[in-house]
Length: 314
Image 1 (cartoon, rainbow, N blue to C red):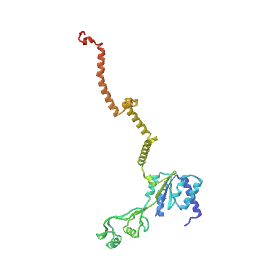
Image 2: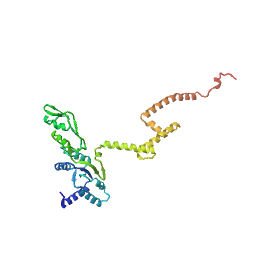
Image 3: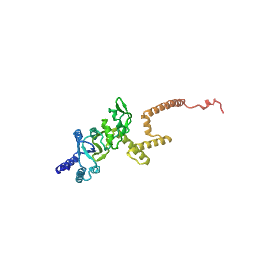
Image 4: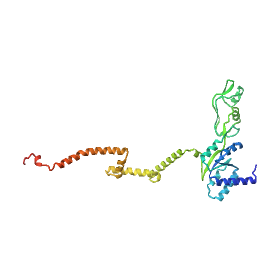
């Protein structure tokens, strides 16, 4: 049913206002989402943001008009993404909280013939609650069964539908007879917009520790490349200073040249300082007797060479 002129103007005004009011948004698809479920989703997001669906042509028209008034705005990145059954979830709240709210608002749904399965469907083994007269039905689907306690029982767990396959009428009937609701539908997040940046929603699943680890790994790669190329960067500066000091220390030790910095490290160091202190005490203990002997020799006065020769004249 085509929109009236009044509704179109109201929609344009609403979307244009949201583009100014909010700095973050989720681009979502709403396949197989009913009106009642959409109302539940809107209610769950009431304090966090707003959901706005519409025709792609109308969305593009409003965005182009907005960009004409604000040339160079980052919203121009959104234009190529408006395709299919797409909509917006505008927010200024925490993106992770809004994402969890969107994902939690899903409801179980039965399989429909011809629909593409969003996930794998597995039929568990065990009793089905169906009478033995249904054996032919399972045989037509090549499902091994047996009769136990007056009912049909599936012998082995069965992978019925693979993700991405279309559901066949036989599969839909089987799931209906077994009272299995294999799918759950809701808004599916395709892209995230945050103050001019567009990224995959998987980024929001990363923890703060994951981000720290990735940053440290990237910094180590930059430092390694910089050291290999001999090109100084902030990431490699501390390593360059450390390597240069070690080279100077090695040269100084080889030439018996003392660095004041090394003496300071020896005095203030932890384990190394303790070892150096022990070596200094041993050296002082060995030097002490030699100093005493020198003092005794000085106190003895001049040496009488005649006495040492036995007083004989030559």
